[in-house]
Image (cartoon, rainbow, N blue to C red; front, side, top):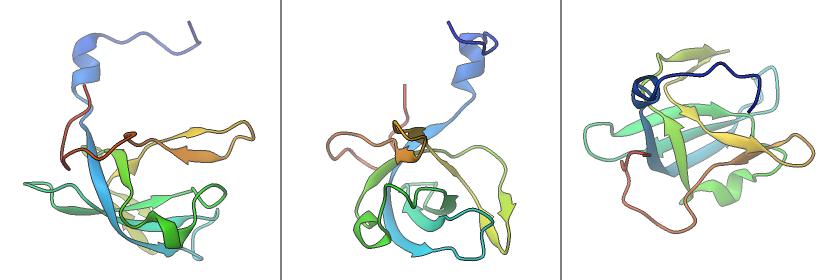
Length: 115
């Protein structure tokens, strides 16, 4: 077990993690740390949401469109410089500590909730 505090399963259920498809990606030079601005389609009631992601080390802007990713969709929006990030796109560190996107290993319907 890690140093993280234990939470109840009900706490986990409060976090709404959905799958979406990146429909646009562009460099975000105004960000303090290198980042990419994403537009992610979650379908249904959620629609298209924006996210800023520090994924420049492992992900190329030109190859992101069409990629499915997982994101927390029920955090409040967060101002990142001049950009309002609406969802938290999820990633994990590679062996060098750089972010790798968390994504399904094959195509799944957009909007699906992680469980």
